[in-house]
Length: 371
Image 1 (cartoon, rainbow, N blue to C red):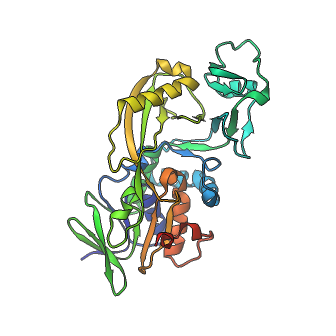
Image 2: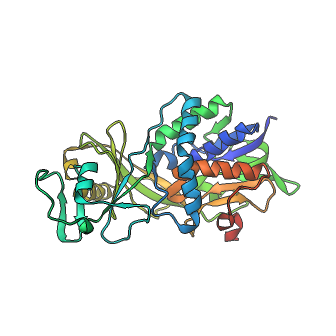
Image 3: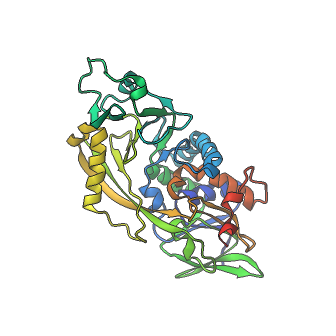
């Protein structure tokens, strides 16, 4: 029976990135995916590489390093796959009157905000009746002073996760990584106290090392019960509206433009189990929240709506490291930051599997913290 050096359970961007990294080290790698590779959380994500905001303090160092690695990460995937990945570096505009901005953010004056995103409406401390479009009176000076504007700029990137994952799948095939899809891993195989492979619904696969990258399904592989739960996020994409250059985030909604003209609008956080149904009322609320900050989106039409399942842990931090079973590793629980953290996760886990120091303190992410 054929065997491999390492089996990766899960074919999302985390599993794919790790498989490619291990293959670069000369390991024979098999990815086992319960459905179609790249079609779960990675497919549903917005792709904001937001290392400077809304990141738990324990995760900040990893997030910043992963964001730094992204241009090289994307370049390699494009080179090996021959596919274009939509990595954008126009940055993010934050709109908030209720929360402090990150230290790295540039507070925006009305003039600067207008120059960055003319179609944008924005909240102001001096007006509570609702947002007012900056483009409605472009020739009139704003009556507001710069310190009244609840807006800031962050030099963050964004990426199209679907294009990214498609490129990663092609790169995996290019590197002769085997992929077995359509069968869920049910159990870890153990021989003599160490990992020896996995058992699926239909077959068994042998390897001396196994890595659980199964996302929201990571807790379903016996005998371990990692406390990873699915958190649903509903999103929609519109076309035919105004052209936006920047990711825009408010306290109620975010908008992520793509280079092909689509604008993604999201997202919800719902504890609703393993269901991915969308709800018309919920999508309408998201769209209305988007209209409040970009009124000209009223001319757009819905292109697509979907929902994905983010893998969340009780402390909202990923699980990274080797378990108490020798040869059995886990890299899951990335919650809302799986796309962002893919490059650094691949680097860390490759070092651990090779028996090398990972260059980062991983105590906060230890699989044993939930024992």
